[in-house]
Image 1: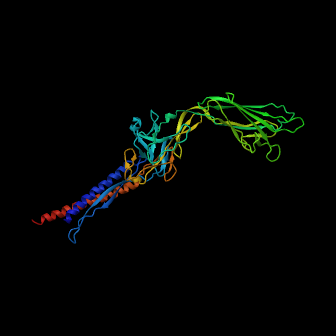
Image 2: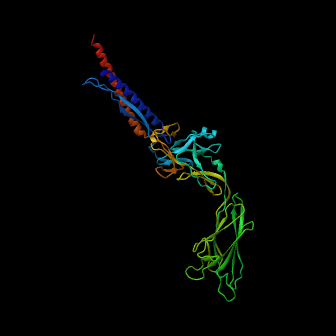
Length: 429
């Protein structure tokens, strides 16, 4: 009966608008929730088969809800270095604190932003219990290759694993000017001695002795411009090189050969105790003011520099735009301890929504892929940042007014149908 279908359509309209009002109220309630993705209610008509020609049966309306995960909100700055957000497409891998502490399987979840802070066990987690996941770095700070279509390489981020770290010395730069008169026949021939501190793999300090000995010319001959460089490790290991400098021309004072090799090499390695790898003694290419020169009649140290530092205590961690999580130590040493990849799926709006602004892959979202931040379709990672709520309060209030009017109109339809049915009942009187 057509009048009955009108009643059913009115009821369907009430239900649909009640659903829309529920999504609006949820959006407004989460207008200050970081990383919240708003929900929208889409209406679609329901068509029923008509009866006889000239009659129409109302089908009503149906509401379907969609969470707009791909809708990005602005980022705001914070004072916490491990407040993390993705500046663009993509999500941050997380898991539950229960799974992380149990040591078993850690189900992969994702979120667009999070305020991560270390707990008593050094695990970076949010106050709501989401644990940051990443790829652990090798001891030298490099990131191993890992599968991109599975979460098998992801681990809960524990910053206390790198509480202490040493920074062994790998390179010593000899920025020294040697006197051009020191190799003349009447010169004293006194060697120039330098002592350079280095740090081994355990963070312990020791010294390398560097001696530059002028090779004097024979009586009546011009200066040789030749020096012997001797580097001695603490255990007595010695490396020796014979250096010859240009005497005239535009390149005067620069190296022309080392041990008879021209153009000269720029460095050599010295094996030192406590280091797995040799320390590179760098004396620079031609014209490099960090290396050795022979000019004037004076000895001058431009800069004898080395890398490395003693054992340092972890003072903070920060995330780079590339997703590298770096540990910063009080000795100035910075080391990469994790890489935080960015997750992307073909259909972000198909992700299964969980509590605390977390999501999980579903059949509708498609499979995930782990990207390096800032590469491919995903955005860069931002530390000291949170993503605001995607709710536009003004827009939601406007939609609330529209929903209220629509709800009232559908209620009026039901009231009208009721009055018409009453008139039909009154016919027999």
